[in-house]
Length: 159
Image 1 (cartoon, rainbow, N blue to C red):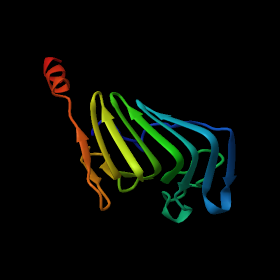
Image 2: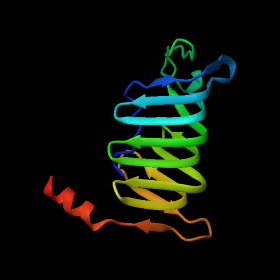
Image 3: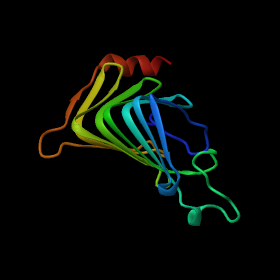
Image 4: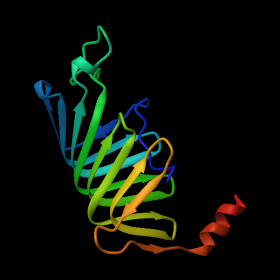
């Protein structure tokens, strides 16, 4: 799972049909065909809300402003057909939550699918620690489903 990461140190490029900045609330709301790119990680969703850290939590003397891009990202919430990819790994879900301080992201939905090549993992909630790459896939009362392709292990060993 070390491929699916966001890094608060790297710049993030975001495109959408509409952007609404709510400076008082410290949020930026991107709607319509949202695409975000950071390093090798790409995110697509129908809607994305970026929550910025409050000035009280900012560095001393810093003036955090959403509009100027000088505010630090606190959390990111995505909804409406979430698709996340990085390298050979891809994940789909109904919603996603990225906590930049905790370095975790959670994808949830009726059917959360994580795939890498022919290997497929299906559950309802995927939680990933971005620094370590550790992941947990919950079943939410059903059963976690996994399809492993032994050929993919052989290909990785050849590299």
